[in-house]
Length: 199
Image 1 (cartoon, rainbow, N blue to C red):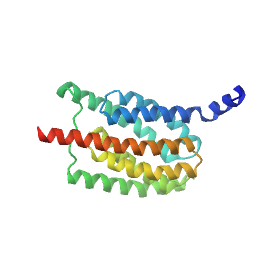
Image 2: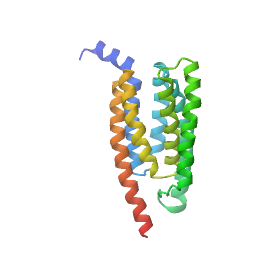
Image 3: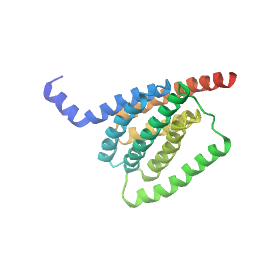
């Protein structure tokens, strides 16, 4: 590849590519319940804030701001648990909490979709729905609930189509990989939960 072509590619896609790499590493570390996942995810949140803003996926850009807050909270919450218990322990999600999370995601989807349509966002209702349920999944993840992986699988599958439509090929490929990582996380966290219940 010619140096000028490579430089042009990196200028156009460097942030997205760096976001892909840091996201994959961060989610893989999360599936392993490794505390280092949080600083890596923090970097990916910042990178994708810029990427999504550039392509007018404003709900996704706004989502990164929420992700920054969740990442900092999750880092603190997991660190506190490791200090007290010596490891990151999976916690069962109660039925009322499950229903409350899904209801909050649905209500936020409608309200945010209306706002995003008014400000001219691309794919306002779809993007708002994905953002809302990503927030629910993120909250469950910070609280160490295995259900977060089920929701991430559903959300990530829809995100793949959205990103293909918006011409974000590397990000669409990333979300295909994230779906696989979410399945791995679901398997590993379910095993950890079962082992905890057996003791």
